[in-house]
Image 1 (cartoon, rainbow, N blue to C red):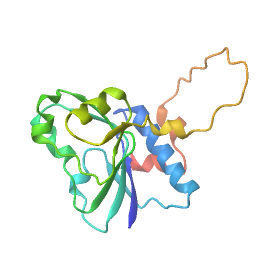
Image 2 (tube, rainbow, N blue to C red; image 1 turned 90 degrees about the vertical axis):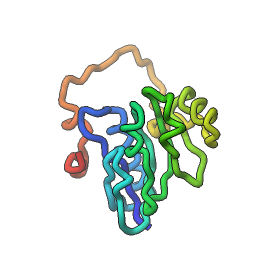
Image 3 (cartoon, rainbow, N blue to C red; image 1 turned 90 degrees about the horizontal axis):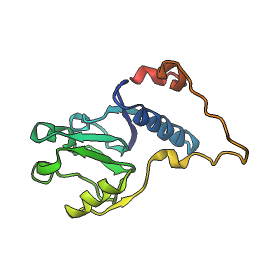
Image 4 (cartoon, helix red, strand yellow; image 1 turned 180 degrees about the horizontal axis):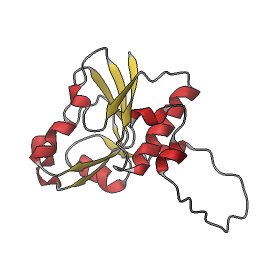
Length: 163
């Protein structure tokens, strides 16, 4: 089995980009080599060796025209670790079926509640950034603002080539 990561286009959602970096780092900590980057909303097109793909991103559903981006590939084993959903959800249940043999972890309570109302086994997981170590004790009275391109701050080990 291969291991994948969601690839987030720059400008889409900086939080999702950070979470993909954190997932990559978790893979590395556990000796797992990521072998495939899959753009968010395009996993339906993956064909090949079975791929484990964590779904950890903000997902916008605007109606039936967005249903394809939620479609499943038979070659992907989806693991919803921190799924967020918003938009015009009135037709979501009619047009979309999330595929997973596992409970669906949701970044927020409204997403969890919505998916539960549709019969999914959903739970509140928060986002992958909750795996970061707790910061050291200290007197934190200042806020630092970094005025730089996020690519320059976040890119590590050639990761920017994926975006």
